[in-house]
Length: 499
Ligand code: NAD
Image (cartoon, rainbow, N blue to C red; front, top):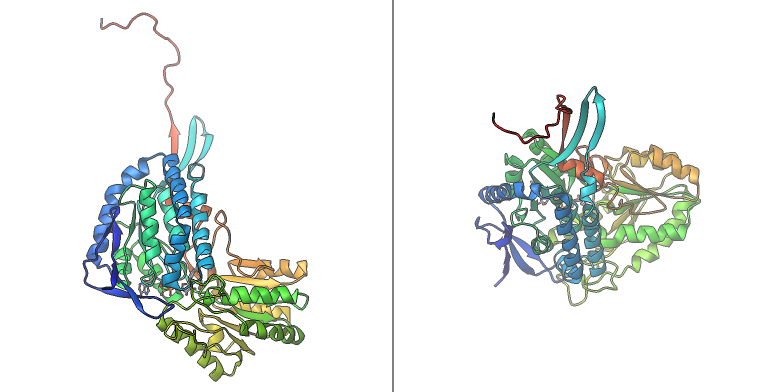
Protein backbone atom coordinates (compact mmCIF):
# COMPACT_ATOMS: atom_id res chain seq x y z
CA UNK A 1 0.00 0.00 0.00
CA UNK A 2 1.40 3.38 -0.97
CA UNK A 3 1.58 5.91 1.86
CA UNK A 4 -0.79 8.89 1.52
CA UNK A 5 -0.15 12.39 2.76
CA UNK A 6 -3.16 14.56 3.56
CA UNK A 7 -3.27 18.08 4.98
CA UNK A 8 -2.56 19.71 8.35
CA UNK A 9 -5.61 21.73 9.29
CA UNK A 10 -6.86 22.91 12.67
CA UNK A 11 -3.84 21.44 14.45
CA UNK A 12 -4.06 17.90 13.10
CA UNK A 13 -3.37 15.76 10.06
CA UNK A 14 -6.52 15.23 8.04
CA UNK A 15 -7.17 13.13 4.97
CA UNK A 16 -7.83 14.72 1.60
CA UNK A 17 -11.42 14.63 0.42
CA UNK A 18 -11.07 15.60 -3.23
CA UNK A 19 -10.19 12.12 -4.45
CA UNK A 20 -7.30 13.65 -6.43
CA UNK A 21 -3.68 12.78 -5.62
CA UNK A 22 -0.20 13.71 -6.81
CA UNK A 23 2.71 11.26 -7.04
CA UNK A 24 5.78 11.58 -4.84
CA UNK A 25 8.81 9.71 -6.09
CA UNK A 26 11.95 8.52 -4.41
CA UNK A 27 14.46 10.30 -6.66
CA UNK A 28 17.20 7.80 -5.77
CA UNK A 29 15.28 4.78 -7.04
CA UNK A 30 12.67 6.37 -9.29
CA UNK A 31 9.95 4.49 -7.40
CA UNK A 32 6.63 5.94 -6.34
CA UNK A 33 6.90 6.36 -2.57
CA UNK A 34 3.74 8.25 -1.61
CA UNK A 35 0.59 9.93 -2.85
CA UNK A 36 -0.20 13.45 -1.76
CA UNK A 37 -3.78 14.67 -1.55
CA UNK A 38 -4.57 17.59 -3.85
CA UNK A 39 -7.02 19.90 -2.11
CA UNK A 40 -10.26 21.05 -3.67
CA UNK A 41 -11.48 24.63 -3.49
CA UNK A 42 -13.89 23.59 -0.71
CA UNK A 43 -11.04 22.11 1.37
CA UNK A 44 -9.02 25.33 1.02
CA UNK A 45 -12.10 27.32 2.01
CA UNK A 46 -12.56 25.12 5.10
CA UNK A 47 -8.91 25.61 6.12
CA UNK A 48 -9.28 29.38 5.75
CA UNK A 49 -12.47 29.36 7.85
CA UNK A 50 -10.59 27.46 10.54
CA UNK A 51 -7.72 29.94 10.44
CA UNK A 52 -10.15 32.86 10.61
CA UNK A 53 -11.71 31.52 13.79
CA UNK A 54 -8.33 31.03 15.50
CA UNK A 55 -6.56 34.24 14.43
CA UNK A 56 -8.05 36.99 16.68
CA UNK A 57 -7.01 35.24 19.90
CA UNK A 58 -3.49 34.68 18.57
CA UNK A 59 -3.18 38.31 17.47
CA UNK A 60 -4.32 39.44 20.92
CA UNK A 61 -1.46 37.65 22.65
CA UNK A 62 1.35 39.95 23.54
CA UNK A 63 4.27 39.66 21.13
CA UNK A 64 6.56 38.16 23.78
CA UNK A 65 4.22 35.19 24.08
CA UNK A 66 4.37 34.70 20.32
CA UNK A 67 8.16 35.01 20.44
CA UNK A 68 8.33 32.29 23.09
CA UNK A 69 6.43 29.91 20.82
CA UNK A 70 9.04 30.66 18.16
CA UNK A 71 11.83 29.93 20.68
CA UNK A 72 10.29 26.60 21.64
CA UNK A 73 9.79 25.74 17.97
CA UNK A 74 13.48 26.42 17.33
CA UNK A 75 14.44 24.12 20.19
CA UNK A 76 12.24 21.33 18.80
CA UNK A 77 13.29 21.81 15.18
CA UNK A 78 16.94 21.74 16.17
CA UNK A 79 16.36 18.55 18.12
CA UNK A 80 14.77 17.02 14.99
CA UNK A 81 17.34 18.28 12.48
CA UNK A 82 18.41 14.88 11.19
CA UNK A 83 14.84 13.63 10.86
CA UNK A 84 13.80 16.76 8.94
CA UNK A 85 16.89 16.61 6.70
CA UNK A 86 16.11 12.99 5.84
CA UNK A 87 12.52 13.89 4.90
CA UNK A 88 13.86 16.60 2.57
CA UNK A 89 16.55 14.41 1.10
CA UNK A 90 14.24 11.46 0.37
CA UNK A 91 11.71 13.55 -1.56
CA UNK A 92 13.85 16.32 -3.07
CA UNK A 93 17.04 14.37 -3.68
CA UNK A 94 19.47 16.88 -2.16
CA UNK A 95 22.21 15.44 0.03
CA UNK A 96 21.77 15.34 3.81
CA UNK A 97 24.41 18.07 4.48
CA UNK A 98 22.67 20.27 1.91
CA UNK A 99 19.24 19.47 3.42
CA UNK A 100 20.60 20.48 6.84
CA UNK A 101 21.61 23.80 5.25
CA UNK A 102 18.12 24.19 3.76
CA UNK A 103 16.64 23.76 7.24
CA UNK A 104 19.23 26.00 8.91
CA UNK A 105 18.59 28.95 6.57
CA UNK A 106 14.89 28.63 7.38
CA UNK A 107 15.46 28.39 11.13
CA UNK A 108 17.59 31.54 11.01
CA UNK A 109 14.48 33.45 9.93
CA UNK A 110 12.57 31.92 12.86
CA UNK A 111 15.45 33.12 15.08
CA UNK A 112 15.01 36.63 13.67
CA UNK A 113 11.30 36.36 14.52
CA UNK A 114 12.07 35.78 18.21
CA UNK A 115 12.76 39.53 18.17
CA UNK A 116 9.17 40.27 17.16
CA UNK A 117 8.40 42.39 20.29
CA UNK A 118 11.12 44.78 19.18
CA UNK A 119 10.28 44.53 15.46
CA UNK A 120 6.63 45.44 16.05
CA UNK A 121 7.39 48.53 18.13
CA UNK A 122 5.68 51.48 16.51
CA UNK A 123 6.67 55.10 15.94
CA UNK A 124 5.66 57.99 18.18
CA UNK A 125 5.84 61.75 17.74
CA UNK A 126 5.43 63.68 20.94
CA UNK A 127 3.84 67.07 20.22
CA UNK A 128 3.15 66.75 16.49
CA UNK A 129 0.96 69.87 16.93
CA UNK A 130 -0.35 71.85 19.88
CA UNK A 131 -1.44 69.16 22.32
CA UNK A 132 -1.31 66.59 19.56
CA UNK A 133 0.57 63.28 19.58
CA UNK A 134 0.90 61.00 16.63
CA UNK A 135 1.74 57.32 16.70
CA UNK A 136 1.70 54.41 14.33
CA UNK A 137 1.46 50.73 15.03
CA UNK A 138 1.68 47.63 12.88
CA UNK A 139 -1.19 45.18 13.06
CA UNK A 140 -1.48 41.75 11.42
CA UNK A 141 -3.21 41.36 8.07
CA UNK A 142 -5.38 38.53 9.42
CA UNK A 143 -4.86 35.53 7.18
CA UNK A 144 -1.79 35.22 5.01
CA UNK A 145 -0.86 32.41 2.64
CA UNK A 146 2.38 31.06 1.18
CA UNK A 147 2.82 29.07 -2.03
CA UNK A 148 6.27 27.52 -2.17
CA UNK A 149 8.54 25.66 -4.63
CA UNK A 150 10.05 22.18 -4.47
CA UNK A 151 13.66 23.22 -4.20
CA UNK A 152 13.78 24.46 -0.57
CA UNK A 153 11.05 22.53 1.27
CA UNK A 154 12.16 23.77 4.72
CA UNK A 155 13.75 27.16 4.09
CA UNK A 156 11.09 28.86 1.99
CA UNK A 157 8.04 27.66 3.97
CA UNK A 158 9.82 28.98 7.10
CA UNK A 159 10.73 32.30 5.41
CA UNK A 160 7.02 32.80 4.90
CA UNK A 161 5.27 31.14 7.84
CA UNK A 162 7.57 32.26 10.68
CA UNK A 163 7.30 36.05 10.16
CA UNK A 164 3.59 35.82 9.30
CA UNK A 165 2.65 34.03 12.51
CA UNK A 166 5.08 36.01 14.66
CA UNK A 167 3.26 39.15 13.48
CA UNK A 168 -0.05 37.68 14.71
CA UNK A 169 -1.50 36.28 11.49
CA UNK A 170 -2.90 32.85 10.79
CA UNK A 171 -1.14 31.19 7.87
CA UNK A 172 -2.11 28.83 5.06
CA UNK A 173 0.91 27.11 3.53
CA UNK A 174 0.55 25.45 0.12
CA UNK A 175 3.92 23.73 -0.29
CA UNK A 176 5.20 22.04 -3.44
CA UNK A 177 3.28 18.87 -4.15
CA UNK A 178 6.60 17.20 -5.01
CA UNK A 179 8.06 17.26 -1.46
CA UNK A 180 5.42 18.07 1.18
CA UNK A 181 6.62 15.86 4.06
CA UNK A 182 9.04 18.33 5.66
CA UNK A 183 6.52 21.23 5.68
CA UNK A 184 3.92 18.91 7.26
CA UNK A 185 6.37 17.93 9.99
CA UNK A 186 7.35 21.57 10.62
CA UNK A 187 3.68 22.40 11.21
CA UNK A 188 3.45 19.58 13.76
CA UNK A 189 6.50 20.90 15.58
CA UNK A 190 4.96 24.39 15.70
CA UNK A 191 1.87 22.89 17.35
CA UNK A 192 4.05 21.04 19.86
CA UNK A 193 5.82 24.35 20.55
CA UNK A 194 2.52 25.87 21.67
CA UNK A 195 1.14 27.43 18.50
CA UNK A 196 -2.67 27.27 18.78
CA UNK A 197 -4.44 24.92 16.34
CA UNK A 198 -5.58 26.69 13.18
CA UNK A 199 -2.76 29.29 13.14
CA UNK A 200 -0.53 27.29 10.80
CA UNK A 201 -2.31 25.10 8.26
CA UNK A 202 -0.68 23.09 5.49
CA UNK A 203 -2.96 22.51 2.52
CA UNK A 204 -1.40 20.32 -0.14
CA UNK A 205 -2.42 20.73 -3.72
CA UNK A 206 -1.85 22.00 -7.21
CA UNK A 207 -3.34 24.77 -9.35
CA UNK A 208 -6.84 24.22 -7.95
CA UNK A 209 -5.65 24.87 -4.39
CA UNK A 210 -3.53 27.85 -5.48
CA UNK A 211 -6.47 29.42 -7.32
CA UNK A 212 -8.70 28.83 -4.30
CA UNK A 213 -6.19 30.68 -2.09
CA UNK A 214 -5.92 33.54 -4.60
CA UNK A 215 -9.69 33.92 -4.88
CA UNK A 216 -10.51 33.54 -1.19
CA UNK A 217 -11.93 36.79 0.17
CA UNK A 218 -10.54 36.13 3.66
CA UNK A 219 -6.91 35.76 2.58
CA UNK A 220 -5.32 39.20 2.77
CA UNK A 221 -1.71 38.55 1.75
CA UNK A 222 -0.05 35.95 -0.47
CA UNK A 223 3.65 35.21 -0.75
CA UNK A 224 4.79 33.04 -3.65
CA UNK A 225 8.12 31.52 -4.69
CA UNK A 226 8.51 29.45 -7.85
CA UNK A 227 9.01 29.79 -11.59
CA UNK A 228 8.48 33.14 -13.31
CA UNK A 229 5.40 32.30 -15.42
CA UNK A 230 3.54 31.09 -12.32
CA UNK A 231 4.88 34.00 -10.24
CA UNK A 232 3.45 36.43 -12.76
CA UNK A 233 0.13 34.57 -12.86
CA UNK A 234 -0.17 34.45 -9.06
CA UNK A 235 0.71 38.14 -8.82
CA UNK A 236 -1.89 39.27 -11.33
CA UNK A 237 -4.68 37.00 -10.07
CA UNK A 238 -4.02 37.79 -6.40
CA UNK A 239 -3.73 41.55 -6.87
CA UNK A 240 -6.87 41.59 -9.05
CA UNK A 241 -8.71 40.61 -5.87
CA UNK A 242 -7.11 43.45 -3.97
CA UNK A 243 -4.69 41.25 -2.04
CA UNK A 244 -1.19 42.15 -1.06
CA UNK A 245 1.02 39.82 -3.12
CA UNK A 246 4.78 39.27 -3.42
CA UNK A 247 6.08 36.72 -5.93
CA UNK A 248 9.64 35.57 -6.43
CA UNK A 249 10.44 33.86 -9.70
CA UNK A 250 13.18 32.23 -11.74
CA UNK A 251 16.79 33.17 -12.28
CA UNK A 252 19.82 33.01 -14.54
CA UNK A 253 22.66 34.07 -12.30
CA UNK A 254 25.89 35.23 -13.91
CA UNK A 255 29.36 35.15 -12.43
CA UNK A 256 31.80 37.59 -14.00
CA UNK A 257 35.40 36.40 -13.76
CA UNK A 258 37.82 39.27 -14.21
CA UNK A 259 41.36 38.72 -15.56
CA UNK A 260 42.82 39.52 -12.12
CA UNK A 261 40.59 37.04 -10.24
CA UNK A 262 42.08 34.25 -8.18
CA UNK A 263 41.35 31.57 -10.77
CA UNK A 264 41.42 28.62 -8.35
CA UNK A 265 38.95 30.32 -6.02
CA UNK A 266 36.73 31.24 -8.98
CA UNK A 267 36.72 27.60 -10.15
CA UNK A 268 35.89 26.34 -6.63
CA UNK A 269 33.07 28.85 -6.47
CA UNK A 270 31.66 27.86 -9.87
CA UNK A 271 31.75 24.16 -9.05
CA UNK A 272 29.89 24.63 -5.76
CA UNK A 273 27.43 27.25 -6.99
CA UNK A 274 26.84 25.68 -10.38
CA UNK A 275 26.44 22.03 -9.43
CA UNK A 276 25.53 22.00 -5.70
CA UNK A 277 22.00 20.70 -5.14
CA UNK A 278 22.15 19.51 -8.81
CA UNK A 279 21.80 23.16 -9.87
CA UNK A 280 18.24 23.25 -8.49
CA UNK A 281 18.72 26.53 -6.65
CA UNK A 282 17.35 29.94 -7.57
CA UNK A 283 20.74 31.35 -6.55
CA UNK A 284 22.78 28.76 -8.47
CA UNK A 285 25.32 30.21 -10.87
CA UNK A 286 24.33 28.98 -14.31
CA UNK A 287 26.40 31.37 -16.45
CA UNK A 288 30.13 31.99 -16.08
CA UNK A 289 31.38 35.11 -17.87
CA UNK A 290 35.17 35.18 -18.11
CA UNK A 291 36.49 38.52 -19.34
CA UNK A 292 39.10 38.21 -22.10
CA UNK A 293 40.14 35.15 -24.13
CA UNK A 294 43.08 34.28 -21.87
CA UNK A 295 40.83 34.30 -18.77
CA UNK A 296 38.25 32.18 -20.61
CA UNK A 297 40.81 29.62 -21.80
CA UNK A 298 42.34 29.32 -18.33
CA UNK A 299 38.93 29.04 -16.66
CA UNK A 300 37.56 26.40 -19.03
CA UNK A 301 40.78 24.38 -18.81
CA UNK A 302 40.48 24.30 -15.02
CA UNK A 303 36.72 23.65 -15.02
CA UNK A 304 36.72 20.61 -17.32
CA UNK A 305 38.52 18.16 -14.98
CA UNK A 306 36.59 19.41 -11.98
CA UNK A 307 33.21 18.88 -13.68
CA UNK A 308 34.32 15.44 -14.86
CA UNK A 309 35.27 14.52 -11.30
CA UNK A 310 32.02 15.63 -9.66
CA UNK A 311 30.77 12.94 -7.29
CA UNK A 312 27.12 12.30 -8.04
CA UNK A 313 25.62 10.01 -5.42
CA UNK A 314 22.59 8.91 -3.47
CA UNK A 315 20.98 11.74 -1.54
CA UNK A 316 21.82 9.87 1.66
CA UNK A 317 25.53 9.69 0.75
CA UNK A 318 27.07 12.46 2.86
CA UNK A 319 30.20 12.42 0.71
CA UNK A 320 28.35 13.05 -2.57
CA UNK A 321 28.63 16.48 -4.23
CA UNK A 322 25.02 16.28 -5.28
CA UNK A 323 22.19 13.77 -5.57
CA UNK A 324 19.46 13.00 -8.09
CA UNK A 325 17.10 15.56 -9.61
CA UNK A 326 13.62 15.86 -8.18
CA UNK A 327 11.54 14.00 -10.78
CA UNK A 328 11.90 12.10 -14.04
CA UNK A 329 10.00 14.92 -15.80
CA UNK A 330 12.54 17.46 -14.55
CA UNK A 331 15.46 15.19 -15.46
CA UNK A 332 14.11 14.87 -19.00
CA UNK A 333 13.65 18.63 -19.26
CA UNK A 334 17.24 19.33 -18.19
CA UNK A 335 18.57 16.68 -20.61
CA UNK A 336 16.54 18.23 -23.42
CA UNK A 337 18.25 21.58 -22.74
CA UNK A 338 21.63 19.87 -23.15
CA UNK A 339 20.44 18.41 -26.50
CA UNK A 340 19.27 21.88 -27.47
CA UNK A 341 22.59 23.53 -26.55
CA UNK A 342 24.42 21.11 -28.86
CA UNK A 343 21.96 21.92 -31.66
CA UNK A 344 22.35 25.63 -31.06
CA UNK A 345 26.09 25.31 -31.61
CA UNK A 346 27.48 25.68 -28.09
CA UNK A 347 30.54 23.51 -27.38
CA UNK A 348 29.66 20.73 -24.93
CA UNK A 349 32.96 20.25 -23.09
CA UNK A 350 31.58 17.84 -20.49
CA UNK A 351 28.48 15.76 -21.20
CA UNK A 352 26.62 14.46 -18.13
CA UNK A 353 23.77 12.84 -20.04
CA UNK A 354 25.23 9.35 -20.04
CA UNK A 355 25.68 9.13 -16.27
CA UNK A 356 24.08 6.09 -14.61
CA UNK A 357 24.18 5.35 -10.92
CA UNK A 358 25.17 1.71 -10.49
CA UNK A 359 22.38 -0.23 -8.79
CA UNK A 360 20.05 2.76 -9.13
CA UNK A 361 19.58 2.89 -12.87
CA UNK A 362 16.03 4.22 -12.55
CA UNK A 363 17.03 7.07 -10.22
CA UNK A 364 16.86 10.63 -11.55
CA UNK A 365 20.63 11.12 -11.75
CA UNK A 366 22.46 13.36 -14.18
CA UNK A 367 26.19 14.00 -14.47
CA UNK A 368 27.57 17.53 -14.56
CA UNK A 369 27.61 19.24 -17.97
CA UNK A 370 29.70 22.17 -19.14
CA UNK A 371 29.09 24.30 -22.22
CA UNK A 372 31.65 26.70 -23.68
CA UNK A 373 31.08 29.40 -26.34
CA UNK A 374 27.45 29.95 -25.39
CA UNK A 375 26.06 33.12 -26.94
CA UNK A 376 23.30 35.43 -25.81
CA UNK A 377 20.90 34.53 -28.61
CA UNK A 378 20.80 30.84 -27.59
CA UNK A 379 17.83 29.50 -25.65
CA UNK A 380 20.17 27.68 -23.23
CA UNK A 381 21.40 31.15 -22.25
CA UNK A 382 18.05 32.90 -22.16
CA UNK A 383 16.06 30.26 -20.26
CA UNK A 384 16.43 28.83 -16.77
CA UNK A 385 17.62 25.19 -16.99
CA UNK A 386 17.61 24.44 -13.23
CA UNK A 387 20.00 21.52 -13.45
CA UNK A 388 23.73 20.65 -13.17
CA UNK A 389 24.64 22.53 -16.36
CA UNK A 390 27.02 25.49 -16.48
CA UNK A 391 27.31 27.72 -19.55
CA UNK A 392 30.41 29.76 -20.30
CA UNK A 393 29.73 32.99 -22.20
CA UNK A 394 32.97 34.67 -23.24
CA UNK A 395 33.04 38.48 -22.89
CA UNK A 396 35.71 40.66 -24.45
CA UNK A 397 35.51 43.39 -21.83
CA UNK A 398 34.18 44.11 -18.36
CA UNK A 399 31.50 46.36 -19.91
CA UNK A 400 30.31 43.50 -22.10
CA UNK A 401 30.05 41.21 -19.05
CA UNK A 402 28.13 43.83 -17.11
CA UNK A 403 25.78 44.40 -20.06
CA UNK A 404 25.05 40.68 -20.31
CA UNK A 405 23.87 40.60 -16.70
CA UNK A 406 21.93 43.84 -17.14
CA UNK A 407 20.18 42.81 -20.35
CA UNK A 408 19.07 39.40 -19.11
CA UNK A 409 15.38 39.23 -18.25
CA UNK A 410 16.16 37.71 -14.85
CA UNK A 411 17.90 39.63 -12.08
CA UNK A 412 17.97 37.44 -9.01
CA UNK A 413 21.64 37.06 -8.07
CA UNK A 414 25.00 37.87 -9.66
CA UNK A 415 28.65 37.66 -8.69
CA UNK A 416 31.96 39.20 -9.67
CA UNK A 417 35.34 37.64 -8.95
CA UNK A 418 38.16 40.16 -8.99
CA UNK A 419 41.01 41.61 -6.92
CA UNK A 420 40.13 45.12 -8.06
CA UNK A 421 38.05 47.05 -5.52
CA UNK A 422 37.20 49.72 -8.05
CA UNK A 423 35.76 47.18 -10.53
CA UNK A 424 33.80 45.49 -7.74
CA UNK A 425 32.42 48.79 -6.53
CA UNK A 426 31.42 49.90 -10.01
CA UNK A 427 29.78 46.53 -10.62
CA UNK A 428 27.76 46.60 -7.39
CA UNK A 429 26.58 50.09 -8.22
CA UNK A 430 25.59 49.57 -11.87
CA UNK A 431 24.37 45.99 -12.13
CA UNK A 432 20.59 45.61 -12.45
CA UNK A 433 20.25 42.63 -10.11
CA UNK A 434 18.89 42.31 -6.58
CA UNK A 435 21.62 40.35 -4.79
CA UNK A 436 25.32 40.80 -5.52
CA UNK A 437 28.29 38.68 -4.50
CA UNK A 438 31.81 40.10 -4.54
CA UNK A 439 34.10 37.08 -4.56
CA UNK A 440 31.08 35.26 -3.07
CA UNK A 441 29.21 33.00 -5.49
CA UNK A 442 25.81 32.52 -3.79
CA UNK A 443 25.05 35.81 -2.06
CA UNK A 444 21.89 34.76 -0.20
CA UNK A 445 21.40 37.53 2.37
CA UNK A 446 21.16 36.47 6.01
CA UNK A 447 17.85 36.46 7.90
CA UNK A 448 18.15 40.02 9.24
CA UNK A 449 18.67 41.44 5.73
CA UNK A 450 16.15 40.88 2.98
CA UNK A 451 16.05 38.54 -0.03
CA UNK A 452 14.69 39.46 -3.45
CA UNK A 453 15.57 39.74 -7.12
CA UNK A 454 14.94 42.41 -9.73
CA UNK A 455 13.35 42.44 -13.17
CA UNK A 456 11.38 39.26 -13.97
CA UNK A 457 12.78 37.47 -10.92
CA UNK A 458 10.29 39.23 -8.63
CA UNK A 459 6.85 40.81 -8.75
CA UNK A 460 5.74 43.17 -6.01
CA UNK A 461 7.77 45.61 -3.97
CA UNK A 462 8.84 44.18 -0.62
CA UNK A 463 11.51 41.49 -0.22
CA UNK A 464 11.39 38.26 1.75
CA UNK A 465 12.48 37.96 5.40
CA UNK A 466 14.25 40.59 7.50
CA UNK A 467 12.43 43.87 8.19
CA UNK A 468 10.52 43.67 4.87
CA UNK A 469 8.70 40.52 6.04
CA UNK A 470 7.38 42.39 9.06
CA UNK A 471 6.11 45.13 6.73
CA UNK A 472 4.57 42.62 4.34
CA UNK A 473 2.65 40.70 7.00
CA UNK A 474 1.34 43.76 8.85
CA UNK A 475 -0.61 46.92 8.09
CA UNK A 476 0.22 50.33 9.46
CA UNK A 477 -2.32 52.12 11.58
CA UNK A 478 -1.58 55.74 12.48
CA UNK A 479 -3.32 57.55 15.31
CA UNK A 480 -3.45 61.32 15.76
CA UNK A 481 -4.68 62.21 19.24
CA UNK A 482 -5.60 65.33 21.16
CA UNK A 483 -7.07 65.31 24.62
CA UNK A 484 -9.29 68.03 26.09
CA UNK A 485 -7.71 69.45 29.23
CA UNK A 486 -8.89 67.55 32.26
CA UNK A 487 -9.31 68.59 35.90
CA UNK A 488 -5.86 69.22 37.26
CA UNK A 489 -6.86 71.33 40.28
CA UNK A 490 -9.51 71.32 42.99
CA UNK A 491 -8.87 67.93 44.56
CA UNK A 492 -11.59 67.06 47.04
CA UNK A 493 -10.39 65.75 50.39
CA UNK A 494 -13.70 65.22 52.16
CA UNK A 495 -15.64 62.05 51.50
CA UNK A 496 -17.95 62.38 48.44
CA UNK A 497 -21.63 62.44 49.35
CA UNK A 498 -24.84 62.51 47.31
CA UNK A 499 -26.25 65.70 48.76
P1 NAD B 1 6.73 26.04 -9.87
O1 NAD B 1 6.45 27.40 -10.38
O2 NAD B 1 6.46 24.87 -10.74
O3 NAD B 1 5.84 25.77 -8.54
C1 NAD B 1 5.83 26.68 -7.47
C2 NAD B 1 4.48 26.57 -6.75
O4 NAD B 1 3.44 26.95 -7.65
C3 NAD B 1 4.16 25.16 -6.28
O5 NAD B 1 3.59 25.24 -4.99
C4 NAD B 1 3.17 24.67 -7.31
O6 NAD B 1 2.23 23.75 -6.78
C5 NAD B 1 2.48 25.92 -7.76
N1 NAD B 1 2.03 25.85 -9.17
C6 NAD B 1 2.64 25.18 -10.18
N2 NAD B 1 1.96 25.36 -11.33
C7 NAD B 1 0.91 26.17 -11.03
C8 NAD B 1 -0.15 26.72 -11.82
N3 NAD B 1 -0.25 26.47 -13.11
N4 NAD B 1 -1.04 27.51 -11.20
C9 NAD B 1 -0.94 27.78 -9.89
N5 NAD B 1 0.05 27.28 -9.11
C10 NAD B 1 0.96 26.48 -9.66
O7 NAD B 1 8.23 26.05 -9.34
P2 NAD B 1 9.11 24.82 -8.83
O8 NAD B 1 9.49 23.97 -10.00
O9 NAD B 1 8.48 24.16 -7.67
O10 NAD B 1 10.41 25.59 -8.28
C11 NAD B 1 11.49 25.95 -9.08
C12 NAD B 1 11.39 27.39 -9.51
O11 NAD B 1 11.33 28.24 -8.38
C13 NAD B 1 12.60 27.86 -10.29
O12 NAD B 1 12.17 28.68 -11.35
C14 NAD B 1 13.39 28.68 -9.28
O13 NAD B 1 14.24 29.66 -9.83
C15 NAD B 1 12.29 29.29 -8.50
N6 NAD B 1 12.74 29.75 -7.19
C16 NAD B 1 12.84 31.08 -6.98
C17 NAD B 1 13.29 31.55 -5.75
C18 NAD B 1 13.40 33.03 -5.48
O14 NAD B 1 13.44 33.42 -4.32
N7 NAD B 1 13.41 33.86 -6.50
C19 NAD B 1 13.63 30.65 -4.74
C20 NAD B 1 13.50 29.28 -5.00
C21 NAD B 1 13.04 28.83 -6.22
